[in-house]
Image (tube, rainbow, N blue to C red; front, side, top):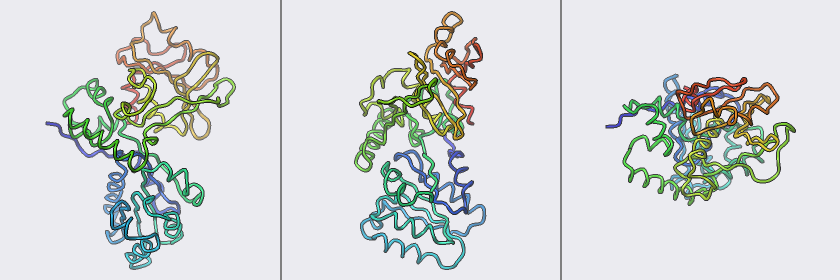
Length: 348
């Protein structure tokens, strides 16, 4: 029998706590199934534990039929106001608010109320690219919610599987619900239904993303298409992505998502005629370089496989990530060699 404890998702809860009671709209966005609503539920539990009365927590699911079919934005605004019985602070949560026509007016109206702390969740890519970014500029902070990190997956499980087996299972898909079953038919059925729901409501373009190519020496972005990855490996079979079934691609996909969690920007590096899998940059310009290797790294081939990283002349950290947890090569000319599994668990 599989036993799983509740996943804390501390990365996202911490974001909400940092900006609690501050004059900014807190936005969680990400594809369906990644756990946005669950994260907000957990955050509301934190509020109640801290002493917030349940009457001062207002939750509106805009995908409920009564909300998006029967209420225009003005009616919905009046409904929320009717629940605010005094001048004390109210925590207002709007789930999938883009379903309500004219939602930007609703957000603007609630935002200017001095006794409202506003939280929003959305699965729509257009939500951030469209009206929100133009009409509410400077009024919101957004955090993208991803499927489970490997650290989250491991920390929530009391499975008897060892790390190698857990990582193999994690490679199949990191959508949170799949932790509850190892039945292959059920897992396939869940992913197919989730894919259909996403396509019907948000379009399949939200399932893939492209990272731009970056010239490391010239410090400029290159024109043309970037490197394409999927938001979860369970969806790669549904999308037309080159080399999606390649083991190297799967590992790079996992590393890319983890870097997107940890850094402000992630690019595909180019230096001369060579490629660096990832250039990860912080908000202030600090950076790290990563190469990903699926095969073990031996003393005989280390120079060849680390050649691209070795040509980088700046002093920022460089890493080679490999599937070999017992590699004898730990450092080569300042390049750190780490197990992918161990590196992923660093965020525990």
